[in-house]
Image 1 (tube, rainbow, N blue to C red):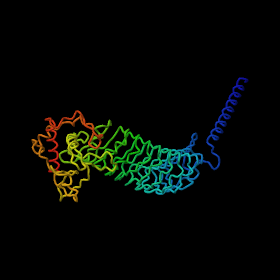
Image 2 (image 1 turned 90 degrees about the vertical axis):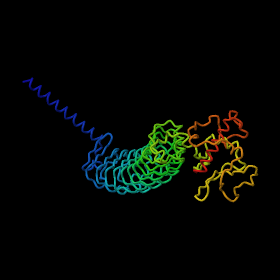
Image 3 (image 1 turned 90 degrees about the horizontal axis):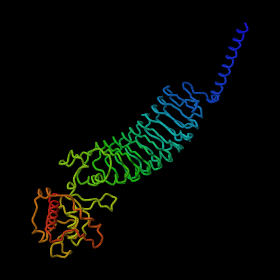
Image 4 (image 1 turned 180 degrees about the vertical axis):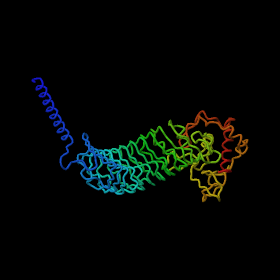
Length: 463
C-alpha cells in the first residue's frame, strides 16, 4: 500500500510540475508576442513573434486591414485586392512591406511618411498603378530596395526619388515609361542596381543618369532607344554591367562608353547598327577596350551587312572624318588617314585646313580648305571669297606629273598606318618634324603622294 501511495504522490507531483512549466511557457510567449488588447493580430491574418511579423496575404482584402500592430517589423499584404494606400496605414517600426500583386491605383502623398525605418518596399505587379505623386515616397530615407515592376507606369515625376539617399536596388522594369526626366535619379548616390528593361524609352538625355556615381549594373534592354547623348553616362564610372540589346540603336558615340571605364559585361546585340563613318568612334573604343561583349551585326551599308562592327578594319574608315578631340558636341573635322594627313601637314595651302563642310546637291563636294592655284597668291585663289565651297582641288605641276594608281591597286596595297607618325597636324608642337619621315625626294614619298592624290580624287568623285 505504501508503495502505491508513493507512486500516486510522485505522479501528482510530476503533473503539477508539468502544469507549472506549461503556464510559465505560455506567460513567456505572451510577453514576447505582446498580444495585449489593441495589438491583437488582424482578422484572417497570421502573426509571428521575433521579429514581429504580420502575414495577411491572399485574403481578398480591398483595403489595408485595421489592427496591424504598430510594432510589426514585417508586414505581408501581397496577393490581395487593395486599391488605395493612404497615410497612417502602417506602423512606425515596419522594416519590410510587401504589397505586390494588388489592384493599387493611387498612393496618397506621404502614405509611407511614418515608416522611418522601412528598408524594403515591394509595389510590383500592380497593373492599375499608372502614375505616382511626387511625394509618394516622402520620408523613406532608410529605404534600400524599391520594387515597382509591371505597374504600367507611363511617367515618373522628377522629384519622385527625392532624398532616398540609402536606396541601393530600384526595379522599374516592364512598365510603359517613354522617357526619363533629367535629374530623376540625382539623389540616389548609393544606388547599385537599376532595372529599366522592358519599357518604351526612346532616348537617353545628358542628365538622365546624373548622380548615379555608385551604380554597378544598368539594364536598358528591350526598349525603343534610338539616341544616346554622348555624355549620358558621364557619372557611371563604376558601372560593370550594361545591357542595351534589343533597342532601335543605329549608332552610339564612342564617348558614351569611354565614360564607363569600369564596364566588364556589355550587350549591344539586337540593334540595327550602321557601320559607315558614324560607327568609327564606337569601333575605335572596342579596339582599345577589354570587355566581354556581344556581337554587333552591321545592317548598313549593304557591303558590310552581316559583318561584326567590332572586327572592321582600319581601311574601312580610311576616308571617314575623325571626331574633333576638342569638341563635346560631336562635331567632326575632315581628316584622313595618317598617310594623307602627313602630306597635308607638309604641303598645306596658306588658308586654314579646318572649316565647316556643307553638303548640297547643287554644289560639288569639296574639302574644307581653300585650294590655291600654283603661282597665285592666296587672295587670287579661284574660289570666291563669298562662297564657302571650293569647286575643285587643283593640282600643282609636280603633282600632276606623278604616276597614277588605279583604285584596285590602292586598296590591295593599303597596309597599316605609318607608325612613325606621332601626332596629328593640329596636335604637333611648333617646329615638329619627325626625323623618321622620308624626304620629299625619296621614292617612298612619291608613292605616298600618289596615294594622297588618289584619296582626294575618290573624295571629289564619290563624296
